[in-house]
Length: 306
Image (cartoon, rainbow, N blue to C red; front, side, top):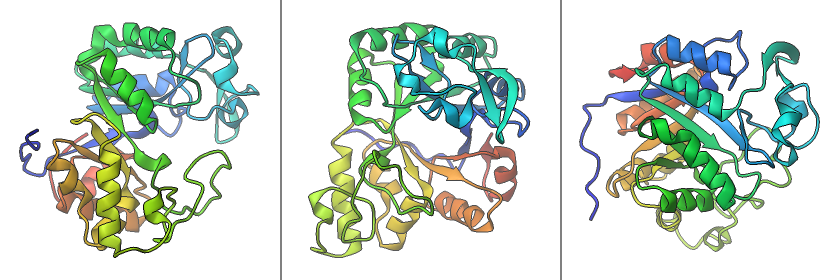
């Protein structure tokens, strides 16, 4: 049986979401990443999309028109079709060119004090053996300071088979999520609002066979089997709170099974989100992802690693 993580006296790590260390720099860009590293950020997250030729671009959205000067689906592009594009920030074209993971890794090597670079891997293309080998070769020099997270459990399992040394993370939002204020993209599951008011295509949500607490417990148990044990979990903060209100402690459930837990993404501009962060800290959350780690730390009644 895997031992649960040792108590940390409520020390919480705050992760810089999309390398957000300056509102003046495009999220996920190499300049933003360098600003985080040079400011001494302990943990930084960036989004990574694999291109058709196995390159890995620092992008969140496959639709290039969303945040760059390009058009089309990034996952169908070659590197030479993307590397001259520029990021857009607040709908304004910047001088910052789209970055790539190999450059981000070299940058990480230049800042040995940064504890972890989290690569949020976007599953918009198959994880082929060539792509997998390319990714592992790229991060090999700093594998002890890199974590690969993804909503794609199949990608996490493939990465676990390729290396025992790589830290992994799983986000279950393709299987269980809350209803948001904005319409969900048509091609992103879950597609159904289940009987418990959550987005969930699993048969357990087809009708109310029990209380909300039992539903969460059953779904957490099923989801846990999809990824390797010891994998960190990245769960939408509001979903953790809904489970807590229903009487199910998702954080404790995962701690008992040897997994750390992160709640994302805390928006410090909203007082309710700050209160949510405090609740999660009180319930033993290990990490919180936010666009403003230093500001969030000032609100938390515990020691934070920023």
